[in-house]
Length: 299
Image 1 (spheres, one colour):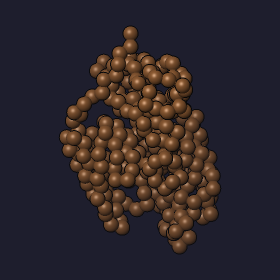
Image 2 (cartoon, one colour; image 1 turned 45 degrees about the vertical axis):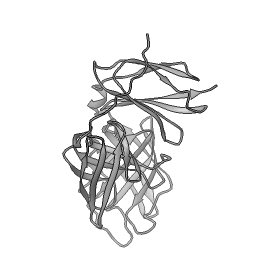
Image 3 (cartoon, helix red, strand yellow; image 1 turned 120 degrees about the vertical axis):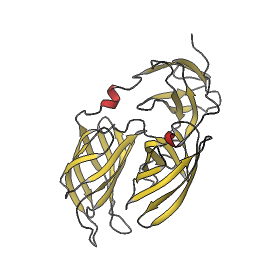
Image 4 (spheres, one colour; image 1 turned 60 degrees about the vertical axis):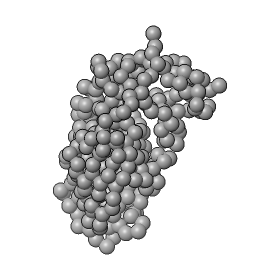
């Protein structure tokens, strides 16, 4: 027997809600619209990193109703942050969609390939831990540090090296962005090199190795739903720990979230009568993992 979904109301938020890495992006979701990056919260009111050129820190606070306020400070100045959480895993921050990165270690292992740009090329190997941090690297001047994350089908990383910044830019600091699927990273890089930032044409990297313990210990592994195509109601079934709060979301092909509910039940029904015909992404998310499937609405 399936049960109707019951949304959790009057949710209580606090600074601890924003803990760990979150993805920031502008709709429509694309790694190339200069609106994709990450932000790291410590859960205690401090911002410890931001995926941009320079050195970042800051502070934040979250009210019981999910209102976000704070300041982001970097080498060139500062600006105020303002936003609103609409669930434990998503919200709005300034002009960005704010989305918790479900699995920080999605790219853990070794990432290898050739990075090509107008400012030069580098054949690299990056070792990434299960929190998304780059722990070692070859092909770049030491020391090398940074983070790289994958979520919602895209990836974004920012790397700093020991190379001195010159007039031509080169490899002292660069961003990586693109699409991620089946252990392959297809995208571009942007070097810190003046107004054009030496953006590459196309770069392909490959992830090998499995060092991610988070996925192995995640609270759920798979879910099923019927019918598909659907027209009015989608019935969903999955296995989770008792009383584990899960979030189910539906995204359109532009990356916009069109429906989201916080649920505790392993079986429920979702009404999709208000959604237009088309292809959507049905996503179930826990704190440590996201599972996505294609949903077709057809009437």
